[in-house]
Amino acid sequence: MEKAFDRVPRFLIWWSMRKLGVDEWLVKAVQAMYRDAVIKVHSAVEMSYDVTGAKLYRPLPFPWITSVVWRGEAAGRDTSPSQRYSRNRKKENLPRAIWISLPIITSVYVFANIAYFAVLTPLELKESEAVAVTFADKTLGVMAWIMPLFVSCSTFGGLNGAIFAGSRLCFVGARAKHFPEFLAMINIKYFTPMPALMFGGLMAVTYLCIGNIYKLINYMAFVEAIFFGITISGLLYLRKTKPNMKRPIKVHICFPIFYLCILIFLTVMSLTSNPRECFVGIIVVCTGIPIYCFGVMWKRKPKVIRNALSKITILIQKCTLAMPQQDHFE
Image 1 (cartoon, rainbow, N blue to C red):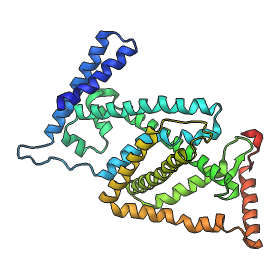
Image 2 (tube, rainbow, N blue to C red; image 1 turned 45 degrees about the horizontal axis):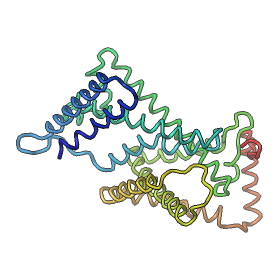
Image 3 (tube, rainbow, N blue to C red; image 1 turned 90 degrees about the horizontal axis):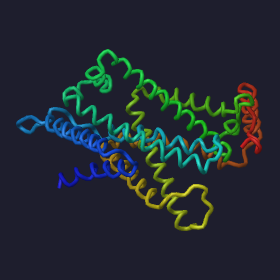
Image 4 (cartoon, rainbow, N blue to C red; image 1 turned 135 degrees about the horizontal axis):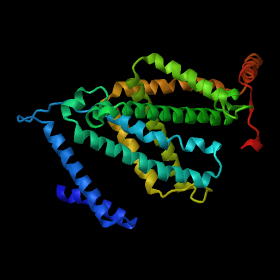
C-alpha cells in the first residue's frame, strides 16, 4: 500500500512535466530528487524513535500545526479578495492571482519542510529556536546570513498584506454602516483609507497587551476559522437557494465544500486540543456585540450622541485629510 501511494506523486511529476514539454532526462532527474528526499524524510522519522520505541522528541501540538498552516496558507488566500476595491479588471485578475500564487507558495512551503527533514536530525529540530537559521548554517556556509534576511522579507510581506487587507475590511464595513462613518473615508492625497489604517494600528497595539504572541495567533486562527466557515456555509446556501444569482466570479461547488470540511476539521480539533484558548477567542469576539448593538442596531440615538459622533468624524477628517469615497473613484 505504501509503495503504491509513493508511486502516485512520482507519476504526477512525470505526467505534469511531460505535458509541459520537458525533456525526459530532466523528468527522470526530478523524480530521482523526489525519491531521494522521500527516503531521507522516512529516515528522519525513523530516527525519532529509539530502540525501545520511545519518542526522542515531543510531538507538535495541534494548535501549533493549525496556526502554522493557517498563517502560511492565509498569506495569499484572505488578502487577495480584500483588494477587490483597489484593482482594475477584478474578474480576470483575482482568479489569476489565486491560481498562480497559491500553488507556488504551497510548493515552496512543502519543499522547504522536506529540506529541513532531510538535513536536520530530530534532536536539532527540537532544540533549534529558528529551524531555518540552523538549516542555513549547515548548508549555506558563509552565505548563511541570507536566511534571516529572507525570513525578514517574508515577515514584512505577510505583515504588509495583513495591514492592506485589514484596512480594506474596515473600510468596506464602514461603507455598509457597520463601523463608524470616518472609517469609510480616504485620504485626498494618497487615495488610501488612512483612518482605517490608523484604526487597525491602534487595535494591533491593544492586542499586543496580551504578551504571548502564540496565544494571540491561536485566538485569531480559531476565530478566523469559525467566521470563514460561516461565510462558506452562506455561499453554499445561496448557491442552492439562488442558483441564478449574478456572480462575477464563480468556482466549482467542490472547492467550497472541500474548504468547509477543512475548516470544520481545524475548528473541532482546536476545541478538543486547546479549549481554553478557543473559549477566550470566542469571548473576545463577543465583546463586539454590545458595540454592534450601540452603533448599528440603535437607530434613534439622542441628539447629544449624534453631535458627539459628528464632531469626532470631523476631527478625524481634519487630522487625516480624508473625505468619503465618491462613486467616480471606484
